[in-house]
Length: 365
Image 1 (spheres, rainbow, N blue to C red):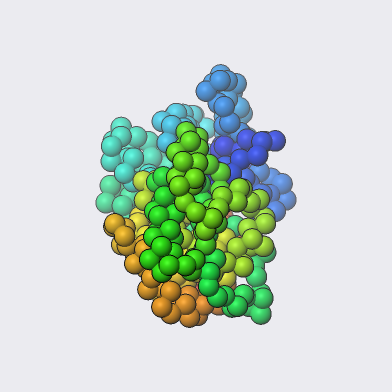
Image 2: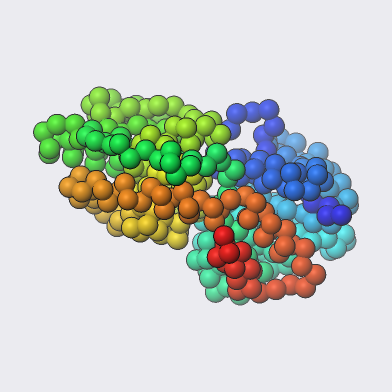
């Protein structure tokens, strides 16, 4: 029997749309499905208000579980990584770290005191091959590839929507914040429509508005025309129903902590190509001219891309079927099966072997 305990931000009973919470909840849900409810959970929501209670819960967890999976973000890693490494000197469990986002390598370079703790973990699971390479440069031999995943109602190929004509429907589907490129998206659509003298693109913006950004966002939105609308938050299990009717998703992010954005999975399952910046790990996930297009993040580059696509919209439509096929690589059944295979291994293996195992599994699909 596997005994797995998870320490992460679950926020039970609360409606949360951030990537950290969503991925933590999904991992728990998928492991429960695979392991017949063997997973025990410590919820770190508002842990700073109840530190003693949380430490007691963590001690109880490590006493009863063979495998401990920690999922801390920026602030939490300063506490939970040393805490579990030190506790493990007594309990001798296998501690695994599932990283959410693409920030860990840069973070460890700045906070070198955490490196010895991180190297004592049994495994570190990251969302891209580039992150594995970055950890290996720091001397890590315990990094494994674990892409983002979502169990979504995959659209059938015969349901793909090819009937698109001006004005072409564009959308963004992420947290609404400056660093996600929301203002660039609004500006590019507005500029293209002004240049063409008519509405050739509309833009619908979906997602939770980042705390502290609402006033700025409303100001920018108010200066745009009817071509740009804010559409609110979509439940994660309704994303395919919403996205399948769009022509293209814009992802002009330059967010410093960007990893494997969950919105890219929503688009793949919906048969929706993505126009994304060449930022962080985007080009590992958005395959240029296969499931979308990658462009350089510079002034007016998004506008230029939209003008190029306007001349030949078939460039986008031809990619829809590829998106649906690509989603299969990130299906939870494959990702979780690989994750369990890695943590169950008696002997530590190299990160290269961990990547190979995942690659072979997907090549067989």
